[in-house]
Length: 329
Image 1 (cartoon, rainbow, N blue to C red):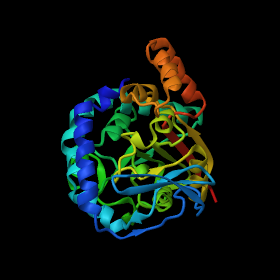
Image 2 (tube, rainbow, N blue to C red):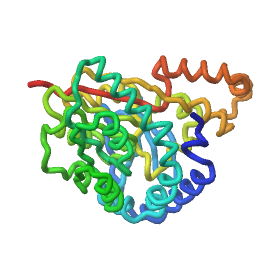
Image 3 (cartoon, rainbow, N blue to C red):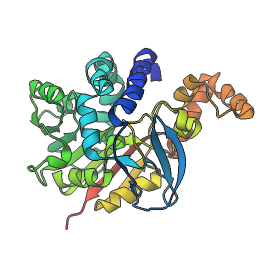
Image 4 (cartoon, rainbow, N blue to C red):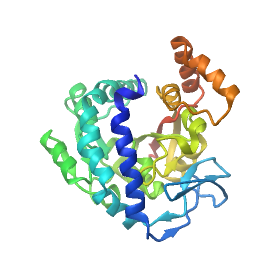
């Protein structure tokens, strides 16, 4: 898989331009409040950089990168409802790559999760997808496991409608406002949402409430320990305020999941795009020697593949999978 397949440059650049404009238009006069580490809760941090008027700091305890001081939740709620970049993502960007992502991402995701739970000898009879979007993951899971009782949590009116048209029960609200289905699911999943969450701990606790005792909570999101984020840092297009404001470290994920009451926390980074993202960016922090080294890897497909495999094996990809088990007691 290549970055261009799932994030075509023309669409990505337009999205970034709109995000920059939205950052100024939607948050210019917003009240901002300091927050403690969104992963471990520590107040010890160092300033890292400012981007589009948003300051990012790094936790000195767990290494998580997060945006602080942070606009209030109501400002973000309005932003996601009204901003041009959010509208562009939902109506232009994602529909343009939906089927490619189905083939390259969602089917492979279903296969991998099914294999994980088969090895655990764990039956997923009830499934919740938080931030279900167009419902593609639920479609793919149900095509493989037709008897599953699937529930979508999706606050967008239009996307909730898409999920309903595909036959899924939908809770049309933000996760934290869900009042039903407590202890409902064997598995609660959430893909590429945690980096957006205003309060990741509250978000994860709300996910956990939907899972039954002995059930599992699964999240995929961005990891600041990953190669492309470490190399590109503030120049990374993945660090894109106001959308992406949380970048946990591997240690940060472990701390966050434990604070949410989850057990047997497991973190992997099965990403496939770190090398390709850095290659496309052509930015090596102005290090000539490092640039020579990376160009050697980039020029050889076998080396590139081997290097990406090394990153995955050592939890050094920017795409993280995190899973925890809900206590039986």
